[in-house]
Image (tube, rainbow, N blue to C red; front, side, top):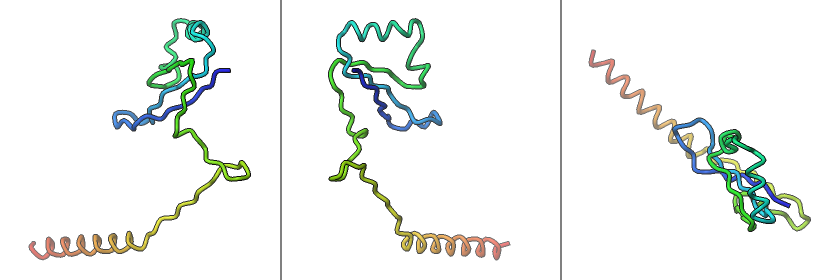
Length: 110
């Protein structure tokens, strides 16, 4: 049975949307792939979906970004990442002091 996967493409600053391609793989025969294309008639499937491209393959196409790591019990592994804001705070305070000094210098020259 065919699978449908989404492949996110590198971000394009020309659009506000994340570009992507639709990958249909494990299509049993070339005739089935042709039928799949014919089912949409004159419709540009990629354009209708908002995708950059729709690619159809008989082979299995593995997209590493779509793999979900599983723990030993078979459940998806979830990772929670928290930022270290200590250094960020120091950098921000330094930038504020620098801006205040420039503002004071600009005001005293008037």
